[in-house]
Amino acid sequence: MLSKNQLGFLYMFLSVCAFSLMDLVVKWSDGYPLGQVLFFRGFVGALIYFLIIPRDRIKNFYYTKKAGLHFLRCFFGLIALLSIFTALRNLPLATVVSISFAAPIFTTIFSIFFLSEKVGVYRWLAVFIGFIGIIIIAEPGLTELNIYYIYPVIFCLGMAYVAISIRQLSRTEPVWLISLYFSISITIVSLTTIPSGWIVPSLSDFIILTFLGIFGGVANLWLSQSYKYSEVSLVTPLKYLGLVFAIIFGYFIWEETPTLKTLAGSILVILSSVIIFRREIFLNKQISAPRHD
Image (cartoon, rainbow, N blue to C red; front, side, top):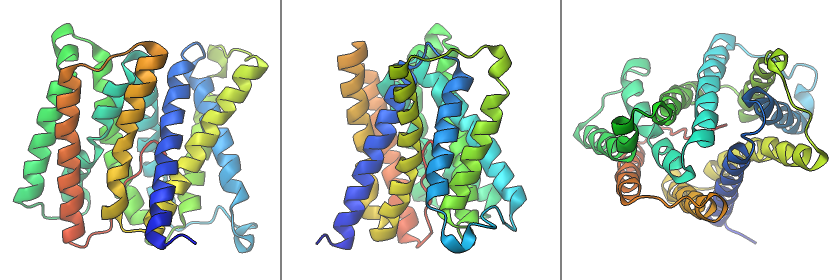
């Protein structure tokens, strides 16, 4: 029988694996319209969340007193998802994953404006270190005017607000409802892109795209379960295994070799995130650390 901390580690590891596999499928699916790929992420994800609705909420599963905050969470979540999907299709996998770790940096800054939090010297130092890391990783994009390097940064901005909104919603809203509304919003937005020309997938491609939705859907459930069973400070470092998976997948599938600048910058970004997480835990704050949702 596993202890609570061991269960937390297991769920976090499964979450990281699922997110990494989702990234892999998104990058592989660049032959399909982005809206069509979003549909599989949203629709299949919504089906998964429908399966876990408690029996006493079947008839009024949609009920919420915070519709406005759900809308903002979905809006900024969609911006983040579109940005990360676009980045994954046009940049090396390890580069995108490295920059995506910077989301807590922007969450720290946003918390000042949206949650009226006071940010001390340690977290400002972490923000500075993180920005240096981002600049090092994105340096090729700055010199070559590669616009795609801005998309992981937009993802971080979007996810920073998502983290803030989930922190507020989770006080009264169940995790499955927050995720369900987001998956439904992805599905609705994706359907508007049908006129732009979807492609009929082969049976094998259909199965792979379906798994994209499954990976995305269960990843956040496992992430939430991890935080439920174990302390955030214990399991959060496992998230950075995602960079290891990104380097392995990128190298063996797309022959992408991360540069020394990417590795050096990612170390600074990860260090920055760890400082922020440790400091928030020290201050006894509730931490929401979603990724693509």
